[in-house]
Amino acid sequence: MIQTLKDIGEIKGKRVLLRVDFNVPIDKTGVTDDTRIRETLPTIQYLLREGARLVVITHLGRPEGKVVDGLKLTAVADRLEHLLQQPVSKLDGCVGPEVEKAVRSMEDGSITLLENIRFYPQEEANDPDFAAQLARLGELYVNDAFAACHRAHASVAGLPQLLTSYAGFLLAEEVEHLTPLLSQVDKPLTVIVGGAKIDTKISLIKNYVGIADTIIIGGALANTFLAAQGYDVGASLYEADQLSVARETLLLAEQKGTAIALPHDVIVADTVTEYTTTLDLPLEDIEGAMKILDAGKETMARYAKIVNESATIIWNGPIGLYEFTPFSHGTKILGEAIALRKNEAKTYVGGGDTLDALSRLGIDRDRFTFVSTGGGAMLEFLEGKKLPGILALEK
Image (cartoon, rainbow, N blue to C red):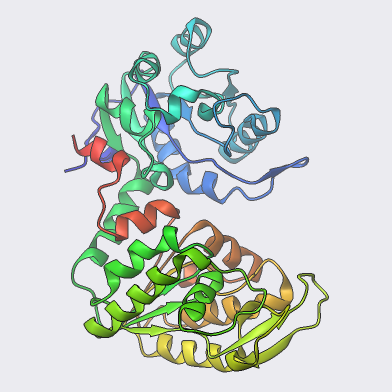
């Protein structure tokens, strides 16, 4: 059983360590997409209203335990300050005497942002001494970073072992909405899996073989399955060393009565640009330097029909190389088809690329039953795995 903010009791005057996921895109102008910051605002605002002395912990990018100027959190602090309409004190470190002194001098209802936690190699190593140093900064711990809960890191899995711990509103909402998908769901159930690599998605696919009525496979992931079926995929991105895994999965699905939907026709090009010439070809015509970069018109009509006949839809991963307009149509058609089902079906969407695609393609997130902030965390949760961050809160 996870305790949430509703169980926290008296907060006023207490130092609360809040783990969030502010891993947001940044350029020279600052934060370019503040969605992940906005999603955590209900938790932050609640704690501040209750008079907590709030210490925020987050990571940004993959600095691999080193200080990287481009991954410092100054721009994040600026955007958070703008959204909260109150000062945000940003420190240059996460642990040590100076940080402890600054935190202990905080006033009720104030907020401090620590520097990028992944500047410390001890974070990803889940070093117990590092977790203990972090614990000295606070009296209570709140995790609102569902997207990081599959990481057994010090600030995610180690720290909650040392302080009385709670789930924030966002994390609690994720668990509440995704947990029913592990058991009984309304049928027909369609699971849509896109992206590039088999190793990040195969466990989810296998978990729903025998449970889902249909599994739609898109993106470069589909190319590997097509190659496993003996199709020539030309110069397309695919994983030659994973063909046996794809074949095993197709056989398992056939044995357990789950339909695997793969493209029949595809959008191909020789080069990847905004202005490249594309062709919509049947699989049998692919050869040479052709690259499969999206699903074709007939395939997308078939996918849309499957979606229209589904009672529950789970979508993780784009259908094509959506970042480029000529190869974005499959993902847009699919997203719109799922969005139109909101009142007739339960629709669940997640994954960083999927959410980015919704934003780029102008598909409103409110048109889905639930949009998960987690990519890898959502995948592992739906595989039935106990996420380290959630398990730590349960303990």
